[in-house]
Image (cartoon, rainbow, N blue to C red):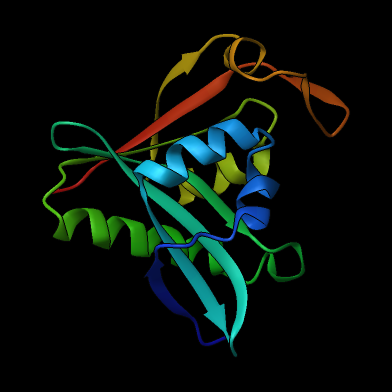
Length: 150
C-alpha cells in the first residue's frame, strides 16, 4: 500500500475521535499540535498529532488508523514518520501514551521502539466526562512510553 503522509491545518476530527473519545481533549491538542494525515489512493487512512510538550520533548498525542485499514502497517508507518519528523525538528525525546486496556496499541508502540516509563493513575477517570470502556473493561490508567532520539 502506497502512503502519502503530509501535514494539514484542518485535521479530520472524526478519525481523531476514534482514538480519543473526548471532543474537548481533541480540540485542545489538535489546535496546539501539528497534524499529519496519511492517504492511500486519495483516501484518508490514518493521522497523528505531534505536540511540543517540554524543552526538547514532543508527544504523539493521538494516532488513529481508519478501522478498514488496520493491521496493514499504517500505524507503523505513522510512527516511523513521527520519529523522523521529531528528529528533524531537533527533539531529543518522543513520548506517547495509551490506555491500560489498549493492548494492541501498547504492543505496536513497544515493537516500534518505545519503552514504558510510567503510569498516570486514574487518568481517564479524572479527565474524561464519562467512563472509557474497551473490550468490556473500564480504562482507568494512562501507560506512558518514550523513545530517546539519538
